[in-house]
Amino acid sequence: MKNITRRNFNSLTAKGIGGAALLSSAPFACAMGVNQKKEKLGIALVGLGSYSTYQLAPALQDTQHSYLAGIVTGTPAKEQIWADKYGIPKRNIYNYQNFDDIATNEDIDVVYVVLPNSMHAEFSIRAAQAGKHVICEKPMGISVAECDAIIDACKDAGVKLGMGYRLHSEPYTQQVKEFVRERTFGDVLFVSADAAYRSTGNPDQWRLDRSLSGGGALVNMGVYAIQSTIYGTGENPISVAAQEFSTRPDYFKDTDETITAQFKFPSGAVGNISTSHNFNANAMYVSGSSGWFRLQPANNYGPLSGETSRGDIIKFPHESQQKLQMDDFARHVLFGEPNKAPGEMGKRDMMIVEAIYRSIADDGATIALDFEPGFGFGG
Ligand code: NAD
Image (cartoon, rainbow, N blue to C red):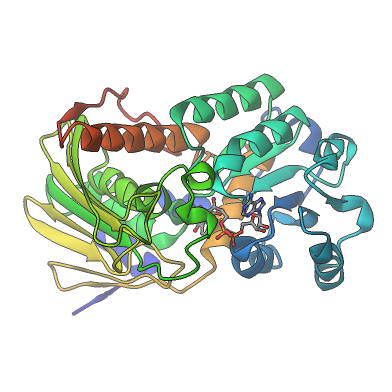
């Protein structure tokens, strides 16, 4: 049994890796606007809940091309705590009301929206209108119309837009993309992906309130499974049929508990996903015409883990996915490197989410999807 690492896998394949760009920071000649002269971008986190507190802020202590410059919070008590912990000056601390004043703050280049899902569109659009680049957490919004509004606002303002899809910056997912691109295991015939966790906490949490979450397991975890089927095949799906299961209706009053869905892809490959707030699952499996590979876990904060039908163990040194993701976005802004998770990717996933909900509402009917080839793929 061999270990595949980024270094030795390259020697096993004829071609180089897409992930090589991760290591590059060579300046790229293009229009960079206001950030032209900056070496590190100032990021302001909007919403200081658990993801900002335990993942993003710590990761921003290690990022090469960005740093934690500001915060936007609706909880006054957090202002001093964060100011003391991270040395954030008062002039870089905002609340939801005075947030638009950020337009005149030259310390802030990027606004990272980490709020409940139904607030993503409002704050992403306000950030763009303030002239700031935007990173928007998943799901991008609670409807395709909201995704369009965010994309349009960023285009109109001439700012960059990235999704908080951290997996596109980490090496296991890069490896999956490379296996698919290089046809290492032949033509992809089947992909399955599962992204789920068991929720037993406060029944009043925003994730169980449709007006704030826009949906249940599907919009929260299902987007990871949808994404796995897409980078696991290298294609966008052409149709989906879906089913919903409910076993704890008293707890999941307002949002979906468990959803399964089946996809068809243009090549003929088929995909199957499950997502749930009732059980735990975290895996992807791809069967090709000459072998298979899988990741398990496939979508948590890492380290991920994988193996292949050749007996290889897929293993990379662990780094914060959030650090890699924010550095990738900063390199996109600063040096014109490819956007690994553009806004169109968030919109594409929301189009699939809406199709899944439509299928469920129509008793599992097959819903056609019509994407331009490669629509929403990152660079
Ligand atoms: P959280 O509940 O821990 O934090 C939410 C924050 O929003 C809190 O600071 C809260 O005070 C604030 N808030 C403002 N208005 C609110 C309202 N009306 N109701 C509830 N909270 C309100 O949530 P989180 O886990 O930090 O998730 C925030 C976002 O980040 C979500 O969109 C989630 O999908 C996303 N997220 C992404 C990842 C990832 O791996 N990319 C991981 C976790 C969360």
